[in-house]
Length: 457
Ligand code: HEC
Ligand code: HEC
Image (cartoon, rainbow, N blue to C red):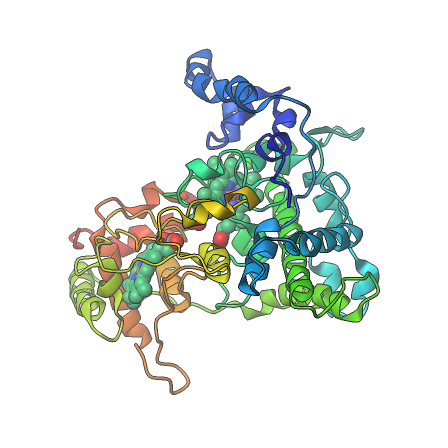
């Protein structure tokens, strides 16, 4: 197995930045392009990354292409006892070849419509006109409409392939999302169900406060850029589907279930399955009840009751978040993206250096997914009461944060009133109203109502 080539790994997508180096500052909203010279000065360190990186790794023209999922192939083969990686390359290259046949390349994505003829809702799962606009090189077509949005705004963190291994990835915590696992954290659907379009639009619009995932709301300021967020969402869906199909194909090959020939019915079934999962997500949104209208006094009492639930055996919140919610409980767990390759490959993610064996295949250092310090108030999935209710009953998929047991359909657990008590307690822990951290648009109304004067701070 060859180690990954330096230029194509580290400089993925950078060539698209040379005409507009200021866009290198990915966490700076796009509005920075219209900024003042003084503010531009603050970007100098980021602009310097380009020449420095060139000196460190050499600056040939980087080839922009989807990268095979070597890490998953190597992990799966190690699980089967193949420690010297002789067979994993075949699994990853065969799966990548089939994925290219069905989904095209980073410059020319395609959609496997002919395989999906009998799959209900498959035509609506991605809008290929927007996928084509967001993929490919940065620039404008004859119609003057901007293209290559994903390379312009997302590649430094999420990588060309959507593998979460962009140039900046190893410096960020949490790491940027690897879309290929098909798992998303902040969504309105239950565990195991894909996010809706609206969930992804919201993530791009609001960003994920408290992480380096920026808000792209500024794209909406100009009329010309109106549908850029929606367009990027189509491409995220496409990359996730392509990547998950590739993963599942690798597993089929590694487990000896398919040789991954293009006409192999069981390989084609993989495409249908993944697309069907996305198609059905829109109908599976969990309805969230309206929050109770409380006086400040009632709010205080409710939040007191919530504190008891928080510390109870039943919810186990305090076990992870600590008795006062400061994130100092005893949970030392990792997220599913990390457990995926470490546990599969027989690597203990807690051991300091064992993971390094997997670094040449794209592994990033395992980092514990710490329970949040709730006093920070930067709620990643939104800070209004309904957002928090949704978060508690759905959990955060792919992380140790579990869904709460809810007393519905005869199941034991907390009633909705008791869950509102917990929500109020969680809100009472942060002194910074989340509306000043998260997007004003989606949190303001309710935060104002839920933080009446006199409410516990
Ligand atoms: C500066 C780095 C950075 C940039 C630029 C960036 N992201 Fe992210 N993104 C992140 C990080 C970090 C996370 C993971 C946050 C977490 O796990 O809580 C993330 C998560 C996501 C998620 C997953 C949300 C979920 O519910 O799991 C999506 C979707 C996403 N980003 C899309 C995009 C798109 C599209 C772009 C470009 C328009 C983009 N990101 C640009 C850093 C970035
Ligand atoms: C097994 C450990 C564990 C338990 C039990 C747990 N949490 Fe968490 N919680 C986490 C982790 C880890 C995160 C951060 C996940 C991430 O964003 O990657 C988190 C995040 C959160 C967040 C932030 C949500 C957001 O949108 O940013 C809230 C609020 C929260 N937990 C409340 C609770 C409450 C209330 C309970 C009890 C009903 C609870 N948690 C139980 C581990 C846990």
